[in-house]
Image 1: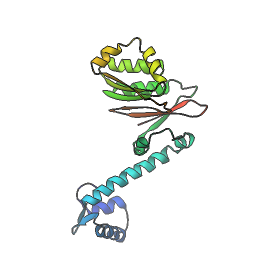
Image 2: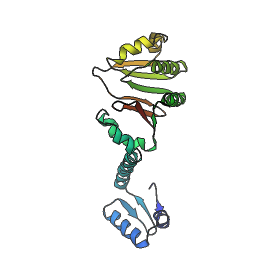
Image 3: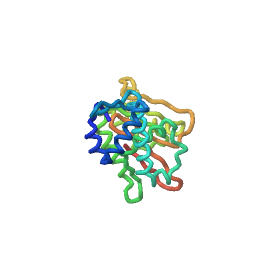
Image 4: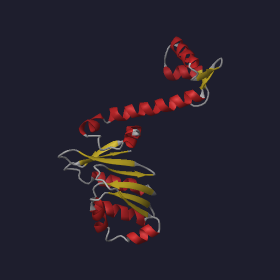
Length: 211
């Protein structure tokens, strides 16, 4: 609830009996979460903080509920805690599976999302030729990329980037490369327009969760 709201507006949006709304507002007021006048109310500073926390919590519950099959079939042990704390961003996400009949669908969608981005950060635990092709294409159209690699993916990235002038891209500031010391089991991409994460099910193909 942003700004001042009339009691009648609250009544219409909640579709609850007047007695329920009155009792609820009195309880919130006693806890200094809302301030009431004769026929309107507004959130206090404390109320706004609590509202922001609750909104994020509800969005997180929605993300788990809407994608419960995905979470049930994949281990989250490899997902960094900082991502789990922001699981609410997946409420409006969708899942793409690289199944035998749709092997190229995740990659095609990934390219479409890159077209609307201007910068990205990619953590590649596995590097394939199409990854370097996409990054090279992204840099050619003026995009800025930060690529984080592992000891396993780094030599592959260098080898597959033979057609890309890495030195020129790095000197121009359009490409930054970092190397992690430990092996990673998750790949992800964060751009100014989307977030995508790839997990691999044991014995099956990777799946991408995007937002």
